Length: 488
Ligand SMILES: NC(=O)N[C@@H](CC(=O)O)C(=O)O
Ligand SMILES: [Zn+2]
Ligand SMILES: [Zn+2]
Image (cartoon, rainbow, N blue to C red; front, side):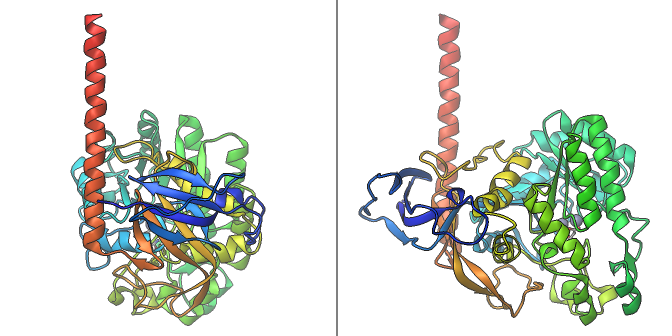
């Protein structure tokens, strides 16, 4: 049913190791995709170019850069419970439009993703929609209340095979609970993703604490509220010998704590959002609540420190923290507005603008930041359809995104594909455009247009059936081997 795809003349991000936006240094490559995988390559090192076959869809990719599909370790899909803000379907459509083939779905839903039942439900909704692989994140504590550990083991062993646990939106503040959580996830190579915010230091906080918060009369949110939790948690992670991930780093001081922890060999990874790489607290002067986010936008020095930390390899990944909210929650007074911004569709343009163009990252490094490292931190390889291409090579699964560095993206409410439009970039023209997204061998985004919901669901169900067959064959083969072994 699925016809193949031939991509002609793309540059591979992996071949572009020099920092800066220029792509002419890499050879042009042809990739043939069939049955969900990359089956042939052409054009490199004297290999012949590939010619289209009957029924194949041809993508002319001259001028485009090909990445392994983007992986977002930090997305809020809002379903179950907040379907007026986003659903698994609408959120994964936004993901596909942004070049993502996998999203990790945060646990602050209603009910909270704190049981095997809820995480399996969220994953099943993702499988059915077909726009992206959905890997649920499990809550660390029951109902995100910070009092008792949730069913971490049951979620890890469920069909969803949860490996990332987070109370995101809230900080796991109790040090004993944090210690126990780290001990628990260590047993199955999981990770705790901490939302580092001391609740006592940020009661009622509205924006970054400093001269500007005083001037605007908004309650301040001190950098130390973030930095002190990170400092404590890297020490706990060291003590336990477990993996710790820090969500949405926002201050220069946080970078220094991470620098110290990494130099000590502590197993900590750090994430930055696109908005913290480009926006500053000054936007709060408008009192426009689109700029209200957790953690708050910080000073220009912080933005520079975060970019430099990416350049120095101290920050491991870029994650969107896509946080949809309905109009009512944003078009109101600053103090009563919700924290959060949508980010899936603007992630690539902002990464181009803040990291690639100023020379803080090469295209190859961006591929690590947006694809390989988040997949690795989230242990994406664990699970039924848990394969992620390590490179765009023959035999690898065909999760591919093609971007146009010379293109432009314009964000307005009509052009965003999620349910909510609380983007700080509305009305702006940003450099770079996501042109095509291919997930498991089928197009979810073709020339900037999302593929139809029914068609994508059909492709996904065919892929799911194929995956189930492969798993069954594998089991049969194992049984056969076991029988042969027994009779020998
Ligand atoms: N980032 C935000 O401002 N909001 C997030 C919660 C979070 O990521 O902390 C949300 O769920 O709305
Ligand atoms: Zn958070
Ligand atoms: Zn979040």
